[in-house]
Image (cartoon, rainbow, N blue to C red):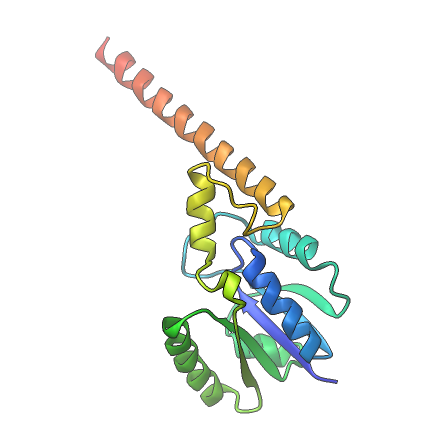
Amino acid sequence: MTRAIYPGTFDPMHYGHIDIAARASAIFDELLVAIYDAPPKKLLFTTEERLEMAHLALHHLPNVGVIPYSGLTVACARQHGAKVVVRGLRNVADFQYEHQMGWSNRQLAAEVELCCLFCNGDYAQLSATIVKEVAGLGGDISQWTPPHVQSALAARFAQLHRDEQTQQGTGREGKLAHRD
């Protein structure tokens, strides 16, 4: 039995991620979508929220599980008995990055292979950053994300907008009160 992991932040999960997970699940006996818990970049969703979105998006794939992880990806692979790390490639920049990461992971854990899958052409330009930017500006992301992700993004951006309005209102009140 070959177990693979598909690591990432998945902030948020989109159809490009789902496509890679579905294709990898057809190749490997078991696939663990490993959601990175403590990346060095700012995230829109908590680890728990990203886990839930991934569970909902991938529930139709019977041999796919979703787990959180932190630390080295190869350490996660070893911990879960995975022999392969799956990554999606959209473009040359992804290839260069994954080549470099694959080399370093190979130095750290020679027994863990790297399997790169080219993205479906429909998602070759899609990224979570684009999804968040378009959603944050009120654009239609229905062609890129499942409905539950669309709802989560709408709710998060509505909350951020309310928080921003509250902060701006508090700031003005504070300045006016300070002048008196």
